[in-house]
Length: 225
Image 1 (cartoon, rainbow, N blue to C red):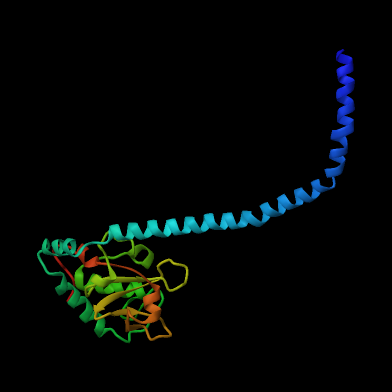
Image 2: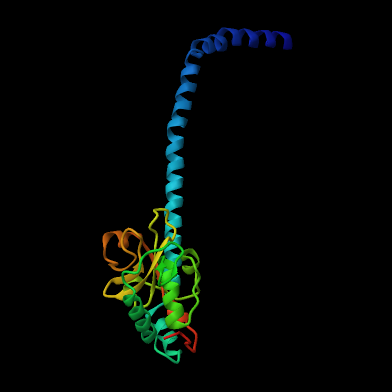
């Protein structure tokens, strides 16, 4: 009986299933090609969306961290009030000395009145007028433990940092004068120490952040006058 059932099943398969497979066999390669093409066309889009979402998330996180680190006006005022001197007095001394040096030539690695680069100019003024020894390079200077100041809360004497090489990393620095102006040792081609506007499209676009380095000034200023 089982042998008969086996013969019947085999006959059924040969009579129905095999012809059906033979009928649809030519369509199998086409279906595979369609499936593979669909995967190929959609995969890059999905990956691009993931990358875009990751970039947006990273940007939002960086912005949130920056906002959290910004010192409020109250915090800055309290810090200044805790000092035995007024920060504007030091700022005035630094800026007055800086203005007297306008036209001093740019010299790469320069830290004296014989010629300055941007960080050398800042370091010279803060050392001579505020008794402060700031880091030598802009990459180190931007990391000093000083209050981070919002652009709309800038005060004379604040340090400004810029990314002028197009890579997003700090490569230049200056000192805020007030009224959207700042002083810096720009470059050999532009004449060395000069005053520029932070509102200028170039400087506005390359501006990264500002720090109130004078908040780090020593209690007793021993600067040379």
